[in-house]
Length: 174
Image 1 (tube, helix red, strand yellow):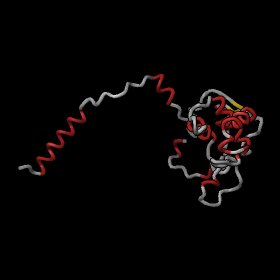
Image 2: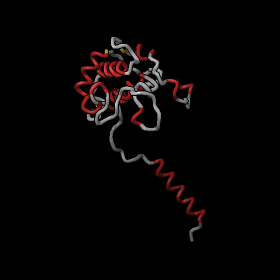
Image 3: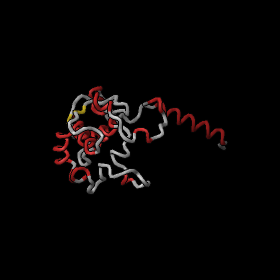
Image 4: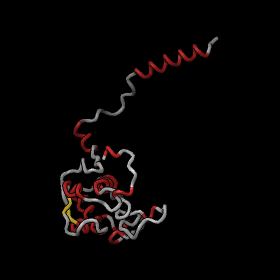
């Protein structure tokens, strides 16, 4: 007859053996070059921002081609959320949260655009296009001048209007 102790010992031995097994050998190892394509994290302090640059004027042209269909002309909203500030946040309604009144860091805005936009073709924009779109959206929200040239250095200097509106869980990581 099996006792609970003997069942536990057998289960432990089986699990230990399974943990030491090689595995199904599916896929292939990722090369350093392939990993670099996906290792694209940009931190709030701007570390990880890539080379490149763009202006609001360049961003306006890209926006008209790739963003207006969802976000409306000049970011006022369409089938997707508005991107320009219409006023302060007065409720928990997500529709009130925009780049100018909610987003805490310009660098993470850049990162989001680069990773997720346009939604039909994420990661399809060049770094220069993302810098230009970020410049355009920040200019629409009156965070930077319309003539500003954004690059990694300039992006790190931007202080978003709601930068201090968040309680940092790990302040030593910023």
